[in-house]
Image (tube, rainbow, N blue to C red; front, side):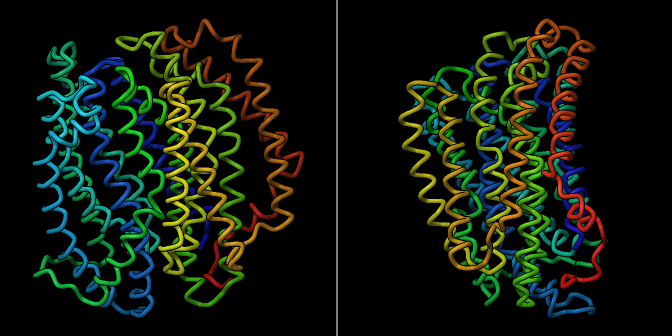
Length: 526
């Protein structure tokens, strides 16, 4: 597998989605701002998405891909009969479970909002907030079925269609807001939020249809039959339950975040969501892309009992991940205020909202490299069908997160919540690596440690440059569109030049490794 090419395809498509996501959130910040309606919309949008990332994209994909790859390997060059049978058996059980769960959650939605909203004391438990959440929640079922189609496509290394699917969600939401502006209802926050809720469910239909079509083009046919708990389906279920914790620590932390956010001041949901948009740009492009790309490769190497190949794939992924995420984290930390001003300031989003969101960005990105490393290290367990060990590391990290939330939120507010999550992510990362190392499955070699040190020094120099340059454009970051674009491009461009120049000169970038990664490999044992 060409790791760099696969990561590039996924990352490139994810970049397109993130760009549309920025456009979406720029419009949202101006139309809803850091208001109670903004918080209500964020709760409605985040509930199905947290479940999606935790169960569908996290646990389901981590458990389904290795089992599906086993069937693909058994089929060999034949017509994927075994793999298709397993997919249909899974779909036939998956759909009824999703229907029941979604219906139950919609029925219990008033109590779910009440629980999040400081037991109804936070002022967010209203008929409108409940209606928004109910309208948007069917997205979970639609996107979960899409995830099954996406897992099949990823398993046969057809990454582009899956990575493009989130663009459809952003396009639907942008269209809903443009329609509100066109028909004159953009001044009514409730009307804007309702239009957004309906657009989310429509997007789920479009995304599911998009990947269904691509899976059929790849030769797979799907049919819903009477649900049967076959041996493969039971094995999938056994793997999914612990994978909820092992693959989904970030999303589990988001559930905890919702509970604490409901006890903070108005606008806290908005500040965290907008800050996370900046954090998710490198996390999505690099972390999710690497994690998605290496799981099938690791599964194949381990199935062939090729320990060296597995070590090589994971080591390359760590090096590539840190090469890009360490400077991203340092750059975002020092450029938080300019970036938040340039993207979000205006309309109902004022200077106080910019300051609050900037503080959250700075705390979030401290954990950015750790979040990416978790996505690189976790497939080392799942490819070996070990979904139990990450449960323990996830549990410890969650306890750290909760304890730090209780200690830091009274001092720092919503920024303290972000810092607690970052420290918990580093805890999870350290524990995952320690277990892999102790079992002899993976070890960072001395040469990579040296290169990591050079990456850190190059990023530190870049951070110093941004720190001294950023004040020079202070009058431009919140000015007209042209001034914002020019000032941010100048700031980011200067930082990137300093980092990559130093990384290249110091040897932080391994030129031979980049050349090796760009060569197309004929088979996984090369």
